[in-house]
Image (spheres, rainbow, N blue to C red):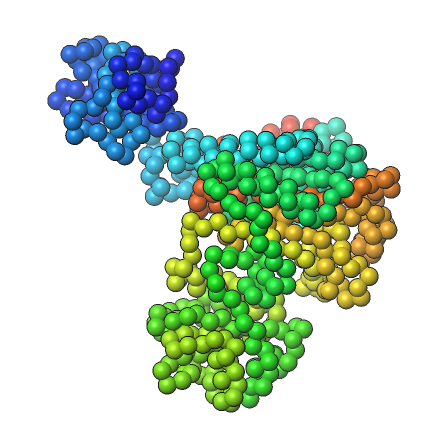
Length: 583
């Protein structure tokens, strides 16, 4: 039907007869000559329908409206003097139409695809219309390039693409499973995979050596801007390798992906131990595009004449006292802003937000009265304070302080407008704790129970480290992985520390444990969140902008009205009966 896409045409095509297909983006009648901006996936081109050249085409053009589907034939010509449009790729040319066909009409659309002020629910209900927005199309063109680059890069490194099952069994991986009832085995359920974790380990036990997959994953959890119930990850596993081998391979295919997306990145990436990330930035996914860092001032606060502060500061295992200096902050922030800061951190468990201002005549603030002159001088030295600075303090339980101060750090950077939105700042976070303590005093695996520990015989569980690694970009976790346990005796030690009894082991992981008994090789892997990656590269505000047909924050598809009720007969075939008054 077409000879060219719109933006394939330029001045070199002047005089050529062409056939174009697309939608009416807009139309204008200028004194009998009708101009149509025709849109296809590549962009816009101007059609000119002049009754002098084709009366028939002009008559048809008078009937068109926005979003009508057209097939147009005509001759490319250069636009007249002072009539070029620098905003369009095709702004120097136009097509004089000799034949025009309305292939399909369109009702009046509920919104303009490029109007981003439209209510999101309406846009998601008519997602197929919103996807006509060139900005969204470009996101998916970028996503396609990234997938092709990932496949090519991994194939060049000897990885084999293998699909793993979507219908599997439920395993504990940190979130709720989506369950699928079985018609044949009534009363039993499949689970949709939260990740291909166990299957890719089994492939290593099978001798596949290097595996990858662009895999669909499913998690029934509360949603937010960068989370969907179904998502996609670039899943990689390799045998007879170390952490270094996995990181090197990941850096290579990430570099190739970003190059395909017209972004040059430098490898190797910076590395940072988990403990350093938490102590300096309050996050295991620190945004390093700006330099605000925490300073430990527990020693100074332990000498405070305020017993609350001193008691907190003396227990360095359970508590933290952190300072956060903002250069020239005292000359920037108003009293109202300072109150706003305290309100912000209180939302995340802070009891308050102490601060000291550096004035020409010395330190000022209610906090100063709790320290003697010598300690205040030491504070100035440790924090490298200068006139005009302000320093904020967080004190209390370790987990709470690091959390709210980490959030506050990013909040301040946005208030100060010091984040370079064009920068791509990667960092590997390594040496994660093997276990994390739950609110009820029990422990769970920070990543998953198949992660190889570094020092499994350490008596204090909180000091056991794992050979695990996360890749972080601009404060967003792109993905992560670990070296896996391949020896049954180590796996049993981990299960024992997690209080997972033999019966539960066999029920949930029996097939993997069997594989470990039959010559499992050393193996490790990583998974990169494709949706998050494309969100960051395209500077989208949400992963919903890079997923063709996303769900809402209530996990609904407004376009198809999913989830939905199903006929009673279908439920009967599955052996399921819906209880009344579930609410």
